[in-house]
Structures are given as C-alpha cells and as structure tokens.
Length: 194
Image (cartoon, rainbow, N blue to C red; front, side):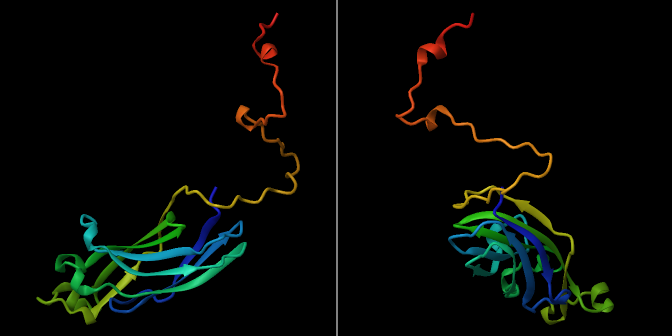
C-alpha cells in the first residue's frame, strides 16, 4: 500500500510557448506522517530511443508532509533547444513527473506533449531553420500513471473500527515471532493423530 497517492496534476499554463516555463499544481494524499521530504522531478523526453537526451527540467523537495490532502505548485524550466535533435523538435515528446521518497521512485506520471508552429502557414510550410520563438506546446490531458511499490519507513494507520458487517482478524504469529519465554511441546506437534 502506498503512503502517498497523487490525486490530480493540473497544468496552469497549457497550451504555452515552447520557451515558457512549465507551471502546474500537484495534489496528493498522504495517509501517514513522513519523516523525510518527497522529491519531485520534471523530465523532458524528446527522443525515446536515446535516454542520454532526456533533460531534467527541475526538481523540488516537499516537506514536511502532514497527513491529509496536500498540494503544491511546481515551476520547471523549458527544455534547452540545443539539446533536442532538430528532427525531434516538432511533433510528440514526453513530459514525465516523478515522485520519490528516500531515493525510491513511487510514482511516474507521463504526458504527451505536442509541439508545432503557432500559425497554419508555418505548420503547412515549415521554415528551413527552426524558429523556436514561434513554437507552441500543448500537453495532453490524459496522463499515463505508473506506481511502484517501495519501502516506506512508516506504516499506514490501522482502522479504528471495522466497517459494519466486515470481518476482522488478528495477526497470526509465525514461529519466528515466538520468544524464549514461550515453550512449545514439539512432541505434541509431531505426534501422529489417531
């Protein structure tokens, strides 16, 4: 069970110019107090086949994180055009928001970003040299969310009362949980049943 669950990611400036900062609000729920901050990163992927071209646009630490619904606004730098191959500037790229706790990624939210010129004439007949000042980007409203199981250093709270009609159970100890003060009669355990 995850201690932190993303509820919403809202892009504040979408669509925007290619050279504008990314501004968005992340809303998440935390069900137990965390000892350390959450780390969030924004990554631009222009060429899916070449990870070396991925650009980490920004990162931030959020904490301390109280129990309940929390939100924060995040601003990320635009991609560096000199690090994007010319053939990958136009069209679809990926924008990835990751959430980590103690260097363990627990969520990855991916969006498609479409980049094109800001007028029909340039879309139909693109100039020889890319004019970055005329490019606009639009981020898809449908994210792809991937969750990862990590080792949280806190346990989720136990429900005080079971829901009406719900079965309750107690933890069953294993042999490793028995302490030295508890004697076990191994003869009775291994005796044949008659």
